Length: 122
Image (cartoon, rainbow, N blue to C red; front, side, top):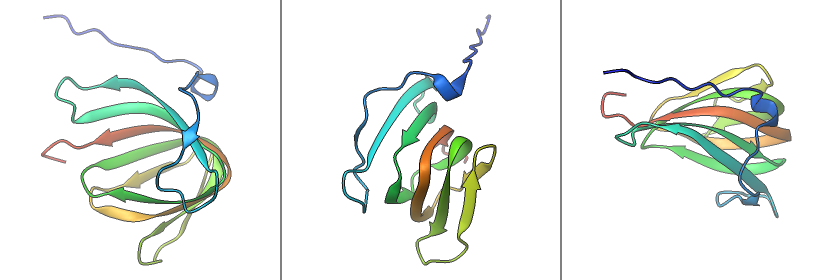
């Protein structure tokens, strides 16, 4: 069996779906857009590009972990209890393990490559 491979170039300029209201936003009129680049056949793993306007929102990684490579922008990411705020910016890798809950404050419009892994062995 031959397995194919894919290459995605120039992620900073890759076209995304239309911007829409961010459902978990705590800020007025915050919008986000994304595009799935690849998904596993079993649906447990997704890789894509996400972009979000400045603002404040909640995030819940109860069901899946997420790896985020920041392409552009700046944000503060904090656990739900307020512990361990982390400043992230272009070039950084953020790991949100399965079970993580918290908040993001985006200071400059952000674009990231994400890998969401909901595999049973995660």
